[in-house]
Image (cartoon, rainbow, N blue to C red; front, side, top):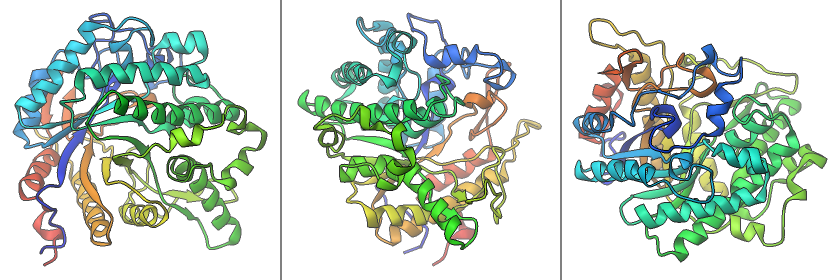
Length: 447
């Protein structure tokens, strides 16, 4: 069997998120999110841009579904916008918002694609932030459960899976420690409290969905990376260990071991989550999952003496992230050794490149090389015994890249934001071929 041939039941997909592509920010009763407000703060987003229009996916749904079907995509990972479903994050549900996702889910199923839903991809209803400090409040976890139960009742019999959260590290750290993302807080203590309440809401939602009879597989999506010291010095190795504890183990240990890692707790000190942890929380957080989603982009390169630029054997993306495909193999095999894991999906993997549309074509060879190397690394992990059920490329199309605005392009499909014209990049055609063969291109394969 070819080394880079994937099993027939391996799931090939693409991923997006609601705020990054939907647009229609004030259509059909959608409430405001923390990102709507954050984008209005001068200097927070490149060029003062926002997701108000984005890719106008809300109005171009059928076109985008047809595009995916033409590419042979087998699964689509999307997020549901909480403020579109429940404008204030509590109280009345918005039937027009639900109807959009009805059209999306049914449209996917009609075209033979599996819907993989994510409940929360950072667009918290603004009212919850304004009235109760958002995820700093334990009450927001309970509000999330009400929203999750509504989604479960409406879609639980039709979706291929439900993930509670996408990358809680970003919500907690970038949103509340550094202020780089919405809601823009800069407080270690707030970040620690937010992380705990996100994890708590995940466990509570899983329990509620199962109690309601939802049969769709349930899990969470975490962004993860291996961590390497810039040198072999004990100081740099210790720095790498700490970064791994803060980035990976901070979420994995509560989910699978019932505790936070001591190394990170000591680093947080008085700014840790101890003030908000209640008896029984870790039992809730550790509710067994049916799958684990992992988003992988690059490795952590740590130095005790401050930031160091990694060597970049395979170059850097337009986000200035090191291309480090072997890190995916390392990460997956390490996680497999450290934890008793359910099946894994690679729920995001991709890169931003400086794409140029010329004569109706985008030659994005760097992106093809990125996907090719990372899928080969994934195949190596599978060969070493890691149970990986599928792969979702980030992203289907160019979109709003959060604080970077529209300056960075991650898509396999080029979007002209002035006209909303979609153009398949060369990487989309490459991916279509890989899906059809369940294998990578010939020049990277070994027999």
